[in-house]
Length: 120
Length: 108
Image (tube, rainbow over the protein chains, first blue to last red):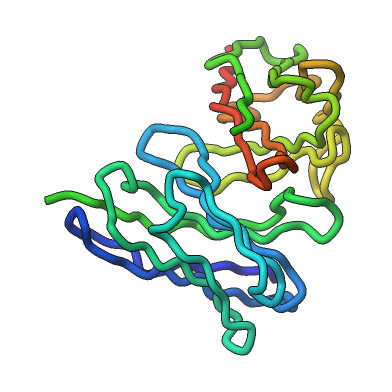
């Protein structure tokens, strides 16, 4: 069974840092591109970042570029999102998602999300 | 960045067909995916590559894409289809993923 489990969310102050993790199981992690997507309370889905299979290619939404870093450890079956210089508008549930191997950019499995709250 | 526009809400009676649109500049030249999200749950992929269905998604769900509009159609709507629906594309020029703002489907 494919599983993605996010962790690392919580409350932090503006300007602070958090590192989110997404531990996966049930599939060959090193073979799949991965994404982070966020959803502010009561709002829609917003794409955050994408990484290729070996971590050599990454891309970011303009709103987080230069502040967030996506990475992965294929030996640990874990995806990461390092979040620096946090802002109130980064408050959201953060989902990790697996890109389907049968389609570019479609994500076929998602975690349940971890809530990040940025507030003083 | 590429903008996708969805109606905020669509209402339909049980047994009827719901159509949810996703507008974008020449979106017909892009590949569109659709997700269903129920309250408190993660999104679920219901249509990919404009009109294909992942395993386990009922045939009642279908998609089309042409010109400036992509459409998700749900035939014989059931109460359990009530959810938020999001369209998504890959914008190759920016190498960014774009989501539409989402449409709340209400089953009357």
